[in-house]
Length: 244
Image (tube, rainbow, N blue to C red; front, side, top):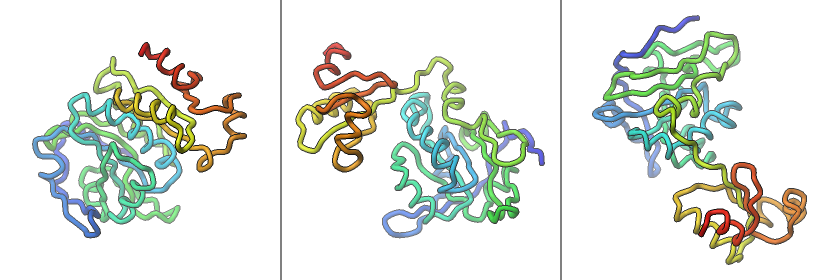
């Protein structure tokens, strides 16, 4: 199995189905590509391990940083139907990206990156890759190497961001332990929202217990805040850390 260089090649004029507002809608070539700079990352299937645990989540995390580099939209593409792709995106809470359901594999075959995975019961699927498409023409492509299995070495979000701007900084990784009704927790979240920074929230009583809070932080009060793996502390500590 080998793949040709697709850089400088026009993408297929395929259409895609979208499941929106309870109905199937069609998005054509012009809707996705005409006059736009888009990033597409393709993967073997929704709900599959690497795709769900790493590939899609990291693109979602870096979506704002990628779009700052003049990218109009980021799409995840797979040979799945629109119902599956829509459900997967909802499960992933992937609000920074959109999907292209290449249900019949027409786009993947047209661009020369379809593979036969019948040996594992998948049928024909797209190979894993990412690319920048400018007004329908592939500017840059990161195609995974021709190796057995499902290699994941070059089509990741960090590689894409580095290509778009080698000096671009990935957003901070922020996690908050909170409790419903806690005013200090609300203020901490408000601070991050004002700064345009996303965070992961672990709600005590829903996502974790008080025992978990103490085991992880050594503290019993909330909020407890972590930035890039560093324990910041509570709301006052956050304001001091940020110079507020």
